[in-house]
Length: 262
Image (cartoon, rainbow, N blue to C red; front, side, top):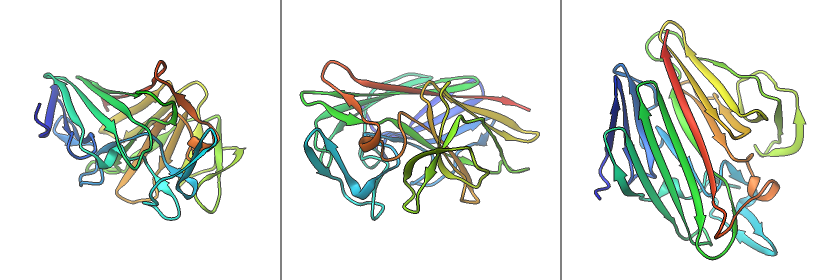
């Protein structure tokens, strides 16, 4: 199928997907209002086969040490699939399925599948990683850039995490869990009952980012956008909390964004 931009519609909601630009959600419009920051780096991109930073770009699979390119020196950041061209497996009016084959510099062959399903008041993104022959550690996550301002007041962020991962000077978790601190944030939080973060644009819209996963990174240090990133483990998780993908056990995660007008 064509890798041109895909448009999904449901009610007054419209989503644009760009398979050829990292399988990202380029746009989410509700009632004609754009919720995602625009630009080729923005929208919402999948983070896979890892999320956030890997310390010094290095991770181990058993006794084997691997080096990833340092695309955020001195670390490697946000996986490899956001830089690749995804294939379109299936499209419909309100659902699309995209796939991406894991390639070098990632050292293990595998396939990533992402499903985007739109309803009148929600967008659900489901992603899975399958291993072909060799088992390997992996993570899944999403990195949406929500517009801080939709034309009136700035968005408010509301969530109640169980803890915050203490962040070192290198922007990576130290391994200590601390009581949540006030923002601004570029931080990972634990939500053991599942991710549930609400963005409210007063008088306009409320949007909730939810996931069964217990990890979320919140980044709001830029004036233009707020990022709420559900993921299957913390930054540097390939080293500290690896989730093993095997030929008989894929890794899967889902996030749902639900909105309502105010």
